Length: 555
Image 1 (cartoon, rainbow, N blue to C red):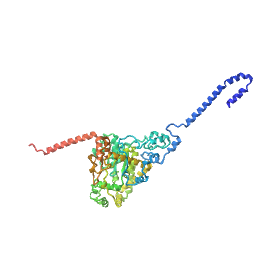
Image 2 (tube, rainbow, N blue to C red):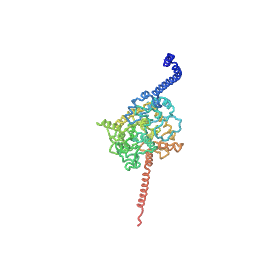
Image 3 (cartoon, rainbow, N blue to C red):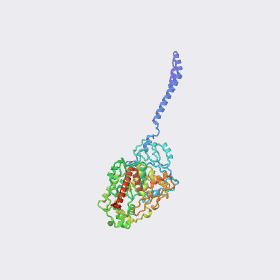
């Protein structure tokens, strides 16, 4: 339009203005070119401004998409109240073949009290498992390539269970981080209250292996003892290196003790993670009666049922070691164990005990669900699946286990009423943690992976593939301590493995006493040398004295 007005104005000029007309016409093409350039510049500027408003920087999701997917959920709310790390969402692209054929079978296993510790038999084509110690945040066992491409293409989707944190949006709304997040660092300040006959020896072995492979410092008992002067209440000077101040910092404490938080806090750092494990008081009582048959309370009774019927005759609290006979869980946690269910203050005592345990411990595991407990522990400590692999240690042979009648079962619940109340409460909190912090389906997946790895480990390390009676253990150094009427089983190493694998496998099956002794020698090498030297000198002096005593006088 602008060009047509210009042409009309030139045409209406007078003849006298011919010179001006010729001048204007000569500049016609120049003005047209300038006009086109002007329009192009405006178009380019408009395009650039539009692109700048809509451009997404690489790795950043669109604000609306990010806000939609990152709203805090009920799981986040539950997680932020405790000392936990949120489980990663289940990746929908994972193969369904990783799950059991029927989810009902595993669901039954998750809630059946008699199937928690026994691993499912798994067929595997793998002959070996990688036993190399791993530091830092764990990697997934299964291949991850199939997840990465989807995660890169869908930035607004929640993080996959197998995706590295480098590909996660950085503008997340919730402070809660998943297990794979870089803010989740493996914990190395750990306290484990080792309770009796609860599979605690297996957990002790896990902690020993983890700490030894990372050169962590253990709070070990004085003078190579295996227990921290149990059954006395724990005191900080029971730990080697505390009184002498030869150890600057302790990382892990996990030997038997009678718990006293104020004294433990004198030894362990302020950020220590506290956990323990419970067992159903009925099966626990049956195990204790067999293992501690020689204590005064059990010594003269023919059967457990007979003891429960006449406990008033044989149970004397003033006699040493009789505490094993009643509410030993409560005793280990530091509470008075001689409590009757019909006592006026029984409910108050139970309530106080439960509240104290809940206050002092970040996690309470359940022995009947050992594999599930290891998954919870893995996430709580920010460890890998390989870190919680194990073989059952200090376990009895089936021949020394006895079935109990319903009548005897009820008697045990009444006799150990305080333990029963504690167990019921923390069994409920255990499953609440599973459902709110991990989820049942994700728990099934991880338990299955754990059992697959343990099956491969067993195939690699063990000659028979399972535990054997002590009479059949070839290496005397791997024989577990035998006590009471129980037959404690052990393992034989696979003779066809190389030396490096043998060394690693051997740590999985080393009994508690032998492993504790070895760690003490490694950690206090100079002290051990000095004690051996002093013992030799004392032996020589004693021998000379004996010889002088038997030598006839010269006169």
